[in-house]
Image (cartoon, rainbow, N blue to C red; front, side):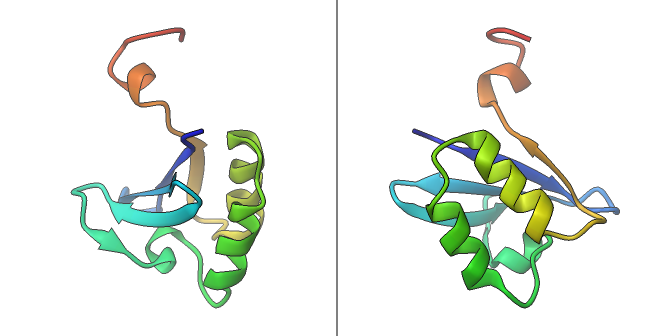
Length: 89
């Protein structure tokens, strides 16, 4: 299952937190690999990764991001097809 979370900070900077296989990664909107701090997580990046690895759904991953991430960062499930107007809205 592919899970993608879009993280937008208070300045409008976007990072994506996503699973690739059993590994979680963060990339900036331009595709540059980044640390979890770029998605609003600081101090406990490994704990965040471990929690995300235990998630069985996108909703659980979103809850982890909202609970462990910055309150100034907006987290939302990213559906790539929906973002370009394909599929259910």
